[in-house]
Amino acid sequence: MLRFQKITVALMGAALAITAATAASAETTWQEHHPRRVEVNHRLANQNRRITMERREGELTRAQAHSLRSQDRTIRAEERAYASEHGSHITRAEQRHLNGQLNRVSREIAR
Picture 1 (cartoon, rainbow, N blue to C red):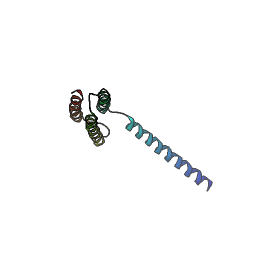
Picture 2: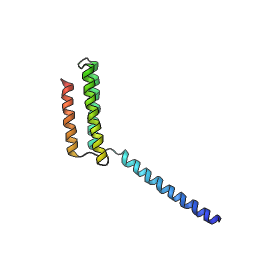
Picture 3: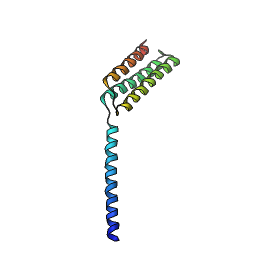
Picture 4: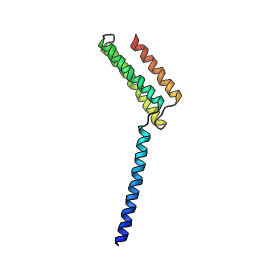
């Protein structure tokens, strides 16, 4: 009986080790960032800083800043939706689409 228990414990330990290794590799896959997503997200962060700066300088009203940030949130949500469809990355066509939207918002900030 003691031998059976040792074998059972050893098998359970091996199964646990395999499960842990699988979970660790899955975490690293999700932690990696795709260059297209990084570029779009950096642009979103930069636009947010620009909106904040323009609002502080009085170039934008509170309503304008709110509207611009709302547009940026919509773009970010769209980027996340694209990424969830393609295993954590976006296609070139999707990147071009998002960049076009970001360009329109950027021009509104500069007015």
